[in-house]
Image 1 (cartoon, chains in turn green, purple):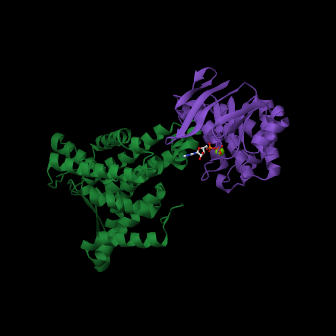
Image 2 (cartoon, chains in turn orange, red):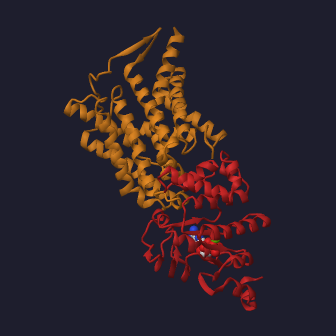
Image 3 (cartoon, rainbow over the protein chains, first blue to last red):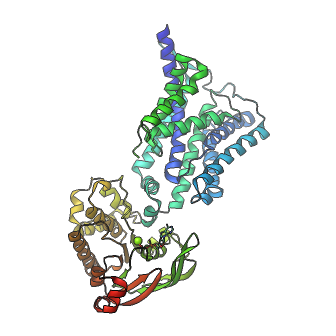
Length: 289
Length: 235
Ligand SMILES: Nc1ncnc2c1ncn2[C@@H]1O[C@H](COP(=O)(O)OP(=O)(O)O)[C@@H](O)[C@H]1O
Ligand SMILES: [Mg+2]
């Protein structure tokens, strides 16, 4: 009996971990290529969730159907934020950059509260909402399963983009040395824009997938944004594979730790593991530098 | 080919170049020599549009470059091997060369340039899979030059290719530059602290001192002039 509960916790943690991983990959891509940590990344996710929610509430679109819209809206938001805000502060002191995206996160949270009230909202009767798969004594929720599958698929696409395509290689060259990349004839400006678009599209997808089993409220980004920061610190700053692996680990730690110690402590468990890892291995679990 | 006219460049309001002018004719090897901090790297970085001059003009075959972005300057046929080489250390030799060919879209075209580059640096062909960061200083410099040659440049600019390299290899690299210039017809603009070698190689040269051109002449003239040697070159 206890074994089954633990197995259930492991499965839930693993599936949630894939979503954390997807969110973190987006953050990591922006950090790695465009050299800026987006403190509003969690709020971007919140907006991705609201996009899916309103598509459902206003037009009756299932969140799985409106995924391309959530992805598109967030990619566009990423590009706008880059062109209007972060591009102007690329060479500014670190502190200015931190305040700019941190300020943006507060602005977006307040804006969501103002426009849509602080109430938490949930999509009812989504296609996969009530389905689940039984596996021995363990149940796997269909929404979580679909979300994990979506995250894995997205990671596969991004990995292929980065490793196998010309544009991806140009993006990684830009990440490694902006000026040297420019001297190869690479339009680094375009690479920054692309990183913001793809990185933000990740949370568009994650947000859309989450709404099938998670309620949305203006503060939802706080938890996910902080978790994503912990994940990329664990995975090694700027490493995309590291972010994905660390996301899964954090998902597991959170749920299993919560199960062993108490659900109220699940976030504390993650932060404790983070502090220990950073003290022992500051470059992150998989970080190269 | 390249005409630089009275450029002024500052870093955060602190001037580094005070009206530098020089020109490079097609087929020439031109050296700019000067001690550490004279402004040599600043000159090349400005030509590449990595820095913007506050005043002055830079023309390539008559076209103004100062308003262009760095990758657009590259498309005009100007390759820049930066100081300290700036290779993509986490990538292989082959990937570094491929990135150098980023502007060439046709595969056949790439293969052709690659073969030419292997002819100049046969050693690179044997170690294509090796990570750039694990090469010796001399090998890294060869790769940096090879990567720039992948652009099929009309003008090749090099910033202190001798930096951190054993003296024997420095001679070898300077020989290679001569060969590239003669056989492939690529015009060369070389910036150096190794004054003697740079002047021997150059058709013409400029002496840069604290952001100003103080002397110019043929390489031979500058090598032979006692006054210049004592005053500026410290040989
Ligand atoms: N990134 C920079 N920021 C501020 N000052 C710089 C920077 N790079 C160079 N300088 C200054 O500009 C002047 C010229 O430097 P540089 O062009 O690097 O000289 P060189 O290449 O001849 O050694 C020096 O006084 C140097 O201190
Ligand atoms: Mg220099």
